[in-house]
Length: 608
Image 1 (tube, rainbow, N blue to C red):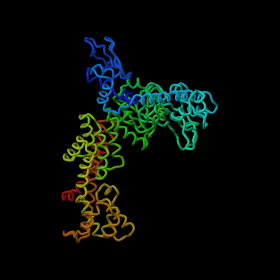
Image 2 (spheres, rainbow, N blue to C red):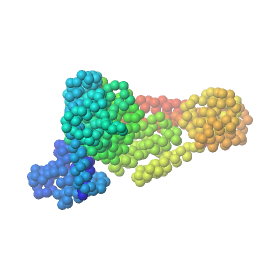
Image 3 (cartoon, helix red, strand yellow):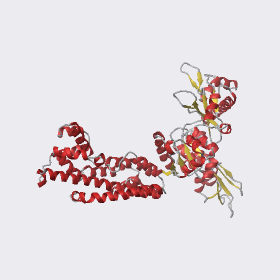
C-alpha cells in the first residue's frame, strides 16, 4: 500500500521546502536561495543551501541533498511514507487513503500517455499556426494583438484546424490508439459512438506544468461563436485549479522580484511578458483556488492582484484576496484606469506606465473597504451594516494577529464605528472566527438609529398635522435633506402625495411604506396633538418647521464633515496628497456653511 503518486507530486508542489527546513535549521536568505550551517555534519561556515525554485536542498560540504521528503527522512529518521505524512501535517494538507501499487502504476502510466499525446498535438498545432493557409486568421489575430513571433514561440501557441477529425487522424498516424485518444481530453465522445476533435478552428494556448510539460489546453474562437474560450477537461494528467498559467516561464523572475502579479487570462499574462513585465502568473480565467495559492506561495510572499476592472473582475479579486490571505500572503489590488485589463492597458500605455500604476496598488483592506462603501451611505444604518458585513471576512482571513488588529482598526475608522462597545463586540467576533457574530454590532447600530431624531420627528408631526404647512414646506425639501434619515420613506410618500394631490392619511402612508420598519412610527407621528402654544398658530408652526429643517441640514453637514475627516486621514495615510488637499478645501467650505446654519438650528438641537 502507498499514497497515490498524484498526491505525492501535488504535496511536493504545495509544500514550501523553506518553511519545512526552517522547523529544524535557522536559514538566512542569500540571493534566490537560503543558507545555513548543515544539520548533517559539523561546520562553522554555512554550506547547506535550500532552493525554493528547484524544490531541493543540498550541502556543499557533506553532499547530502534531495527533496523536502528526503530532508525530513534524514532529520526524523523515518521511512518515505512517514516523511510524506509529516510533510503533509506541516503543510496543512489532508492525507488521502492508501492505494495499492497496481492502481498507482496504472494511473501514472495513463498520465504519461496523456502528456505524450498532448506533446504530439501541440507540436502539430504549432506547425499549423506557423505555415498553414487556414491559420492566417489566427496569425492576423495575433498581429492585431501585437503578439510577436518570438512571444508566440515562447508560449508555444498553436492553431487547431477547423476539422472534425484532423487531429484524431494525426494522432493515430503517430501510433496512438483510439482508447488513448478518448482518455486524452483532446476529443469529445459522442453518445451514439465515435468522437470528434474538441478544439476546432481555434487559437491554442497550451497549459504547461512547472516542468514545462503540456497538461491541458485553452482554445480561443476566431469567429463569432458563443463560447469565446473552451478548455481541456480534467484528465489523469490535469486537475483544474492546481496549476498557474505561465509559472514555468516566470517563476525565477517572481522569486527575484519578491512578488507576483496575478492576472486572469492568457493574454493578460502574455502581453505583459512580451513588454518585459515577467513576474506574472494567470489563474487560467477561473476563480483562484487554495491549491493555486499554495503553489504561488512557494515563489513569493507578496501578490498584486490585477484582474479586470469590471464588476465580475472586482468580485473575482475579492474572492482571490480571501484565498491568498489564508496562505499568509501580503495582498495588494491593482485596478487599472477605466477598468482596463492588463493586455489592453499595457499595449496602449506601455510597461513603464503599467509599472507606475502597479506601484500604486492598494493594500487589500483599503480595496475591500472602498468596494464596501461604493454606492452606500454610511449615514444610513442598513448601508453601514451591509458594509461592515462585507469587510469583516477579509480581516478574519488574515493569519497574523498583529496585522489582523491593524486592519481591523483601519476598517473601523473608515466605516466610522466609534462606539467602543460595538467595536469590542466586532473584534471579539473576529478573534473567535464567529460568522454569526458579524451581525451583532451593526444590528445594534441599526436599532439605535431606527428612532428618528427630534428634528425629523418634529417636522413630520407638523407636516402630517397641517395641510397648508405641507404646501409651503414640502417644495423647499431637497432629496439630500431626508435621504439619509431613518424616516426617508415617509418624506418620499408625503412628497408623492402632495405632487399627485392625494389625501395624506394613515391608509395612504401605510400603503406607500408597507414592509419598511419605519412604518411602526406612523401611528405615533399622526397622533401628535401639539399640546403647546404654537399648535394653533400657523406662523409659529412655519417657524418651527424651518428650525427643524435647518437642524436636519446641520446634522447632514456634520456627518459629511465627519466623513471628510476620515477620508483626509486615509488620503494622508495612502500618500494621496492632491486628494487630501481637495478634501481639506471641501472641509473648510462645509465648516463655513455649518457656522451659518448653527444659530438657526440650535433651538431644535437643544431639544434632543
